[in-house]
Image (tube, rainbow, N blue to C red):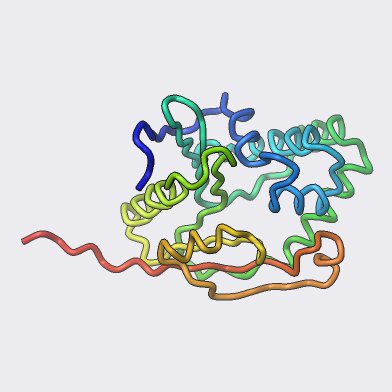
Amino acid sequence: MPELGLTFRQATSDDSDVLADLVIGTAEQEMTRVALALFGLDSLTRARALFRLTWRAAENWRTSTIAELDGEPVGMLQSGSSAMKVTPSLIVAALKALGPLGVARVVRGMRLQSKVSPRKPAGVFVISELHVSPAARGGGIGSALLGVAERRAREQSRSQMALVTLTTNPAIRLYERNGYRIAATATNRTYERLTGVSGRVLMLKDLAPTVQAP
């Protein structure tokens, strides 16, 4: 059960820093460590800068929810596609923040990541990002955010939910406890040499039809 005092709110365009802190977290986190290696980023500062650029470009805050515990942000959920439209202004901003070599490394990382991205079934409700701050883990916040996603999926009459995560992500156990199963695994030797992780898994959850009360 989630902790008392846990509330949810729609993210806004002013939440870029809050979202960046929740997604990037600390360098010791597995997903953050992999991202730093994959995209050739040498610091959390650069990682947060890249996140804010891409998040604003895709306006991903529109499909993001922030979980707050007693008014403090402790988790986030982003559903739907996180793909961004590459525009001249985004390219200029990325060059300013990362430099030409940095941008080239990010592009290489994106191409490599696509090789370990199992194809999702058509028509599924996609969870693109789900993160809980390290200090707040273990209190049911992750499960509560998954519950928010499931309610939205049902509101959209979806019959299946999907997410992709690292093969080494401890949160796989959380997803399995909430009804997800591993449906496919994609690995790549170059990805593993660079990140130390063999690849990523696709996890699916089938939604039973809601039973209407008599």
